[in-house]
Length: 117
Image (cartoon, rainbow, N blue to C red; front, top):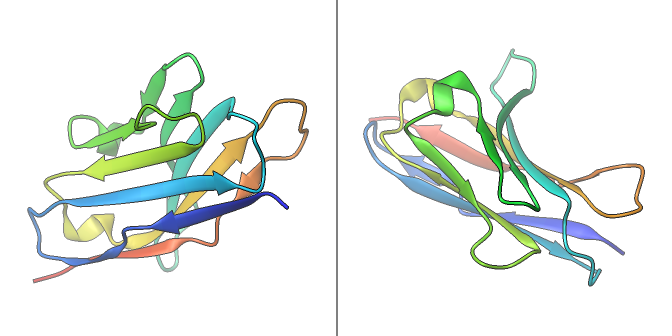
């Protein structure tokens, strides 16, 4: 059974950094696309960053220059490195994976990121 296992959330002060990791388990397939989303209380879920199998990356405007998505030289992991974190980055961060020949993407359960002094 395919699962996405997220880790790395936590509490940091404004200006700090966090690295989130999402690993695809239960399959030998490499991903086509990996994405990180986030949802803050009372807000809709929003896309943070996208990574394709070709290495193309896309970022939400608020993430540009602060967040980096990478695969850690694997094809089953998406790493989101977040720097200069702000209180407004507080949210539950979710990983999404699109696998070959699979019409429905997979989602992780989310990991809490809290930015507070």
